[in-house]
Each structure stands twice: as C-alpha cells, then as structure tokens.
View 1 (cartoon, rainbow, N blue to C red):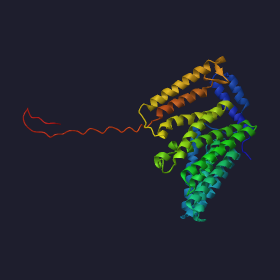
View 2: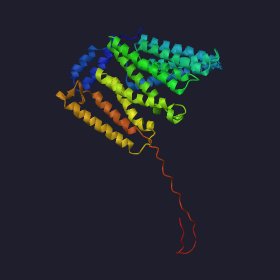
View 3: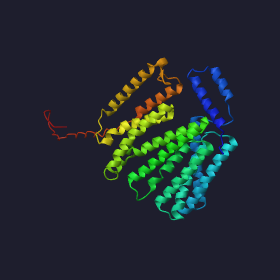
View 4: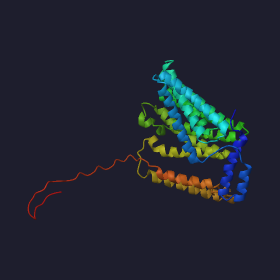
Length: 392
C-alpha cells in the first residue's frame, strides 16, 4: 500500500504549478494565495537546501550507527559483516516507512537518506553473504547484489513514490548482464540495452493504462530515464569502450556500426514521439541524446578533434534555434500545433539560465598537445671591466 494517496500528490503538484503561474504573472497574488490555501495538505515538506542537509546528516548518522555496531560486536569476517549490513538495511527501510507514517514526511530528506542507505546496505549485505556463506562466484554475487538493490529500490518507488528510486531500480536490474563472465562485450551490451528497452516499453504501457495523473507522470519519468540509459549503453564513445578496450579487439566492427546507427535512431524516435504525444520529458530526453550524438560523431568515425569544433557546434545550435523560433512565431497567434517559442512560465527562464551556466562550465578536450616550455639559456659569464660580455 502506498503511503501517499494520488489526491495528496496531485494537490502538491498543483501547488507547485500555482506558484509558478503566480511568479509568471498568469495569476494575481491574491488568486494564487487563495488557490494554494484550497490545495493545502497535511504533509510536512521543506526547502531544497534543508532537505539536502538533513539527507547528509541522516546518511552520516546511519553509517556511524552501522560502524559502531560493527566495532562493538567485534565482527571481523565477511559473512558477519554481510548479515549485519542486510539487517541494518531492513531496519533503515523500516525506519523510513515509520517516519513517513508517524510524522507525515514528504521528500523531507530524512526518509530519503534512510531509503538510499537501505538500498546500499542490502546490496552489500547480499553480495557478502553470497560470496562467503554460499561460496558463489564474484560475478554471481555481484548479480545478486544488483538484484537486491533493484528490488529494494522498486519497493521504495511503489511504497513512497520516490521517482529516482524507480529509476535506480531499473538501472540496477538492467546492469546485471554486465556481471556475466565468459560473455563477449557486444552480447552483454545488447542484453543491457534490451532490458532498458523493455523498461521503456513497460513504462509507456503503464502510462497509457493508468488513469491517475500522478502515476502517469511517474511513468513518463521512468520512460525518459530508461531511454537515456539505453542510449548511454549503446553509445560506445560515452561509455568508454573505444578508449578502454579499443575498437577491433573488444568490439567487433559490425557492432560498432550497429551502435552508430542506433545513436542516430534513438534520439530521432524519441523526438518524434515526444512531439507527437506532446510529452515534455521525452522531448528533453530526445534532445539531450541528439546533442550527445552530435558531440560524439567525430570520435565515432575516427576523425580528429579540432579547436574550432565547439565554435561550429555552437553556431549550428544557434542557427537551428533561430530557424525554429522564427517558424513557430510565424504561425497563427505565434504558435503551431500547440507549440510556441514564447517564454510563458518563469521556470522556462530558470532553465535557460541553468543551461547557460552549464554551457560555461563545459570544457572540451581537443587533444592538442601543450607547447613545450622553452629552455632558459645561461651561457656562463665573465668577470671583468665595463666591457665584459656574457649570455644570461
């Protein structure tokens, strides 16, 4: 049973929308205050900074408690450590659920840190127990640890509605094939990509089946996250296969060019489906993967990077943005098929500012060697009168 009802989460979502509409000037302050009062719930929330601080302190407290118990009991073997980790993982999840039920916390930081600690402790505990008590191989123990982390994360998503826990569950479950020994790199990556693709299809089916707006939004988030993860696995340049193993040895030529076709197909399909269904998160995922494809295209083809590549890339993005903006603005009422280039909400301005800060922080390595420092020339000297000469 879920700790939060769909109505409560829908009210919270509407509260955030009302605040955004009021800041954007779509609602008067009095109207916004009245709507927020009508949407009030009895859940306890906090700001983002205090939320992060509480999560940090709770994580430190949970880790210190586990270490103190480990030292006090004098546990030295891996089996005892694994059992203790698994027990504390269960206790952390129980404590998070009890805090939510008793104090009505909602994304307060404390219960989230306990859930994250539970996922980590259960994964470590299962790996140690499988490796020592049951003498499983390291790869099997790693697969069981990922499965345990996926199970706890998935249950946290269903119980507490934490969307990032659902994403973590999908990632942990899909990464299990990477622990298979004796399997070639193309096969492992194909299995992982298929698992992420299955998660995309499952989330899309859940979004179409659910009537609740909250559940549909969560399914859209999981679908976009799974699609991005599938792209990261398929793109060999981002995942580091070319730099760590090298093409031709770890990755066959056919697999390289298959993945090259996929890194163009996945963003195109995501953008097309996002535009047709007007799904914002899917469009953002398609846009992000399309930009990653453009950035990694030259390394994929074996072409050298140049110092002017970022400038040309920026000019291309500027040209596309200007053309798209003018095309949308030339439509009836400044919009086409429900899409407009006008900044309606205040959050759109904040996203543009964050994108500008992120672009200023990006540093691209052009693989251009730095010039060697010139050696100082000291040729010695001669003591003498006013006409003495030397090279210094």
